[in-house]
Image 1 (cartoon, rainbow, N blue to C red):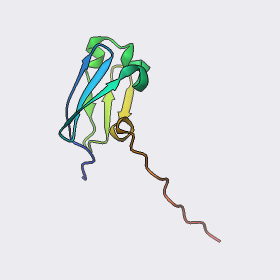
Image 2: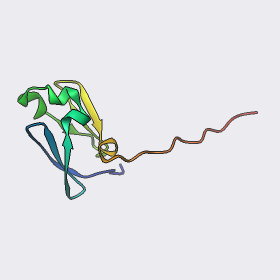
Image 3: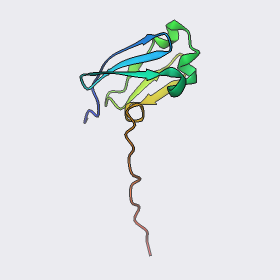
Image 4: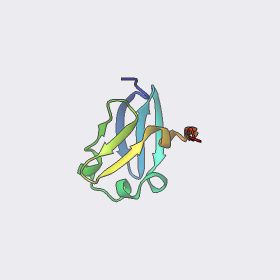
Amino acid sequence: MKKFHEVSGLRFRQDQMIVDIDGREMRFNLREVSAGLLNASESARNTWEISPSGYGIRWPLIDEDLSVDGLLGIAHAPSKSVRSA
């Protein structure tokens, strides 16, 4: 399986989420990223898992999922569909 990103750590400081992505520490304001995480308990925030591909982060206790590409502002162009005649 191709690994999209290497997420090696995740922690919270007040209303910031600090994530180690591809060897760099990235900070995200929870007010801009996720109201669910902003309002979650410390226990729920600290119960997370990374998808095997490194594409997403999931918080099962609050049913919240974030894509790493989305956090980094990486947009993907839609695939071209083939139309039949």
